[in-house]
Amino acid sequence: MKKKILEIVALAEKLLLSDENTDWDKELKHFARWIGYFQHERLVHLIVTCLFSILTMLSIMINIYSFSVPTILLSLLLVVLLIPYIGHYYLLENKTQYLYDLYDEMVKKANEAKKGGS
Image (cartoon, rainbow, N blue to C red):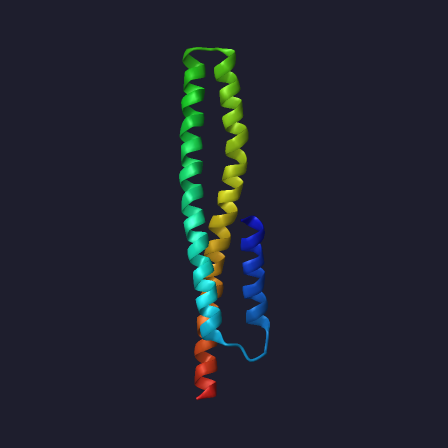
């Protein structure tokens, strides 16, 4: 998903910088669809990240009350898994919000093109 969102962001930036004749209605539909996908992906990763955070905190609290090797291993495993989830969620959140800004710029450019073409 990281590769795809970076690809879509780059495509949007390239499209906004181009001076060629663009079918903005088609492009706006295309990017709106991708934004919807990324919003869904972001929600799923938020849920997973919150779940892992809660499980990590619970396992740490269990370690405080009953110190044992299996619970220490569980805590370490959850922390190791939580770090990449947080990083991935951070990327999804920031790039999706950046896509909102790019989409707004596309809408402005599409409106300018309609006014100029009329």
